Amino acid sequence: MRTAALINIFRSRTRSLLTMAGIAVGVLSVVLVSTVGTVGTSQVSATLVTMGVDTLLVQSAEKSVAVTLTDEDVSTVRRVDGVNDVMPLMASVTEAKMIGRRLDSYVWGVDRSADRLISLEAKHGRLINNSDSAGNLKVCVIDEQFALKSYGRSNVVGKTLSMFLGGRYHEFEIIGVAKSGLSSLQGMLSNIMPGFMYIPISTMQQLTGRTTYDKLAVKLDDMNTDIPVVEAVKTALDRTHGTTDAFIVNNLLSQKSQLEDILSIVTTALSLVAGISLAVSGISVMTTMLMSVTERTREIGIKKSIGATSRDICREFLSESVLLTMLGSAAGIAAGLLISAAGCLIIGVPFSVNLVIIGAAALASGAVGAVFGAYPAYKAASLNPVEALRM
Image 1 (tube, rainbow, N blue to C red):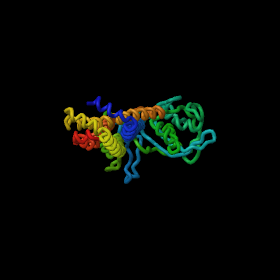
Image 2: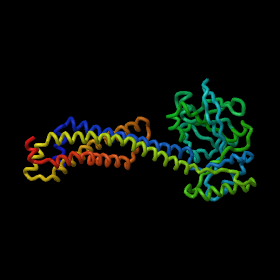
Image 3: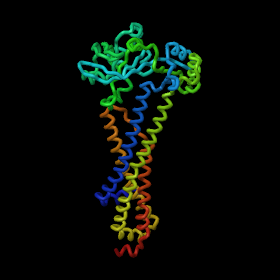
Image 4: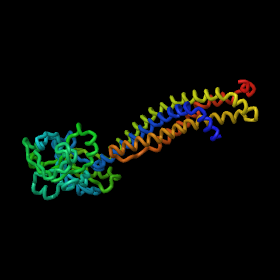
């Protein structure tokens, strides 16, 4: 039956190929949308993790502006059961000058724990260490995109820059160029996102005249047991300050999961919208099969006269319709995966696919063939053999 259906399809090659092309385009659009969504979700997830999203972020509540975070709070949080590491953070949006160029920058005051909590990786030079913090040294680590904007190359270790902090510019030596989790986002949004720089938190305190911190990044032994640890951190800090609900502890990992769920829903919705074109393609399938019934009326009469039943004729045309759509679906899937893989290779991101959506698209195309081929198959099976032979 399948062999006969395949032979019948290629009787009218041009018409069949055009029909399969319509199905292929519909499936291709579904594959592309789902793959872009899957790759995008994976990249966002990986980037957020390397930015330190698998941590707790502690800060004072808006209603408690008088409450500040100090070294005592760092020690308090570090003693809480389930806490693996704590790093104080200071941040400031400022301006930096390199070789005569003024660049917007986001400056982080960090300590030696930065590579463990925000996954900084030194591509050239080194990261901030204890000696830098102890000596309040004016040294900095800049991200790769910042270096490329300034010098057109990534290795700028030993160069200097001027950074505006505490009301005036200060000269900093570049001791390292970091490939941070933000690099991929900065590469795509280089005209929007500022450059990132990291300096010893003690130096930032000295230059800004502050002794407090903006936030505390907290790494847990097990992020799956965050709820009791979050409450323990809040309780410990409130006890230290003699306050109630004066601190906010955000689990950024749970927010990452919510973002992934939203992206997944959006990807599925867009894939369904793209799949509407499959239904439109079904009309061309029906048209092709109806023309086939008209052209093969005499053939149907001969088959019935030598013993073929109406069920046999119906099955033959229905299988031909389904096979037509499945061949188009296979071509669309292959083209979609090839284009997606090439795109990922060009922009340098890992290739990944959503097999569930692709499988659903293949099944949907088969269903389209069955639904839109049902009427032509019924019409062929209903032909009177005597009248058909007169055609």
